[in-house]
Structure formats: structure tokens, C-alpha cells
Image (cartoon, rainbow, N blue to C red; front, side):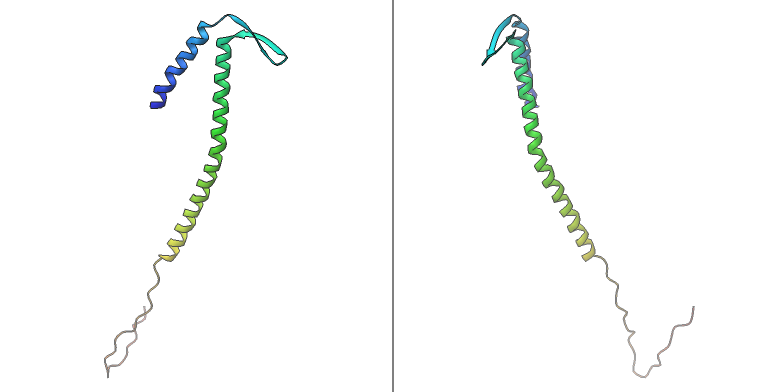
Length: 110
């Protein structure tokens, strides 16, 4: 929200500046010269700056995404290892307590 509070007035000022400066001005860069309005030039500079900033953020974000994917894969691997470790183990058969002098009986067939 705070970004909008900062960006919207800046964009409005830029648009008003471009609208109020419509007369063509001769410009040159080294041996190349052209004629355009200062407002259009300001809008072009703003667009190019925005695109360069977006591209640089995208490049930086690629590394963060790669680290996040590796971390998620590691979490899945550790959770699988934990699930195997905590799996219920079969109980060993327990011998029935025998009373001295009793005859062991076998269970009836099913």
C-alpha cells in the first residue's frame, strides 16, 4: 500500500509533465541528433528504467527460486526419512506365560 502512495503521485507528475511539454526540442547524442518533446523523452526514460529494474529483479529472483526449490526438496527428503524412521514396527510375538506343571495347548483350527 505504501508503494502506491509513493508511485501514484510520481506517475501523475510524470504524465502532467509530459502533457505540458509538447513542443519539439532539438536533441543530440555524440554525432546523432533528433527532435522530440521533452515530455516524450521523460516517458521513454521512465519506461526504460522500469524495464531495466524489472529485469534486474527477475535475475536476482532466479537464484532465490533455485535455493527455495532445493530447500523444498531437502524438506521432502527429510520428511520421508522421518516417516520411515517413525513407522510402526511389528511387535515381536510374546510367549504365553507358562505355569509349571501345565500342559501346553494348541489353539483349535479355524
